Length: 369
Image 1 (spheres, rainbow, N blue to C red):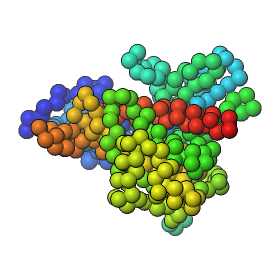
Image 2 (image 1 turned 60 degrees about the horizontal axis):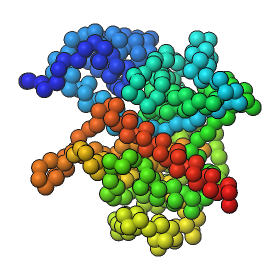
Image 3 (image 1 turned 135 degrees about the horizontal axis):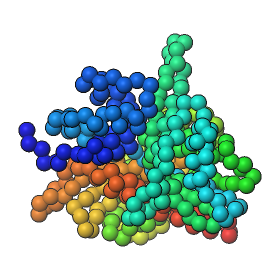
């Protein structure tokens, strides 16, 4: 079978296997081909596998897994601020890595400088073991791996962006810094829903439809919207997925007719709070919790659906790409496709950073009132 792709270099294979695919997949993939490597982290396992030769079917399995992993990832982040203007978070992270301050079951990988065409300065990866009680008396260990990115905002502020596959990923990297930095000298800034009133949350999601992406993307539709009753309780529970399952009992999804009305209001530039359904939700104490938007690119045949969601307690704001389509032919028929890893992360990063600007703007207006 001929393959339209060039055979990847050893470096490309290592990057894909260590940065995109997960360790569970790597172990299964290696063992199914008679390769057994134990007691190593994902990066070392990927290094071993990258030196082997694969046929077209093997490469296709790796490629599909990379796409699947890439499309399931969400992007979130936070800012670490210091009173010291010469504060360097990269140096602190490297010191924590060298001294083994990550904690039990945590592997902090080295920091690398990125290319000049990237929007951040450095990247690294974080591997940790999450232990959950089993059904009997055993413990189940689940290994999670994610990449994160540093950006020096100057004047004592550094931004961290987390390319996560689980909501607990962000908590892990946040805990690394809060446990090892004197928090009377440092502070964390997040996009936190607990600081938004019900009406402010509506404004936040409304503005995301218009300002979430660059001008080359046109808003087309609201594909999904979840509203939940306001909850000021903050938990320190580890299992965010379980907490969200509980919250789903007090959430509601919109019908197609209600979504059509909201889409029309956005397209017409109306204030969403004027929509009858939205007014009713606000009156009953519901907050907008998650919204999926569809955008059309002016310069390429891509149509993408982006899900923006507050998840867990305290609420973590995540951005993920739910679907990607490519339009073909005169009629512009849509076919499912995938963005490259870099394109996918870049789109999510732009959307999250614009959400951060919108959030800070709304918070600033609220404080002035």
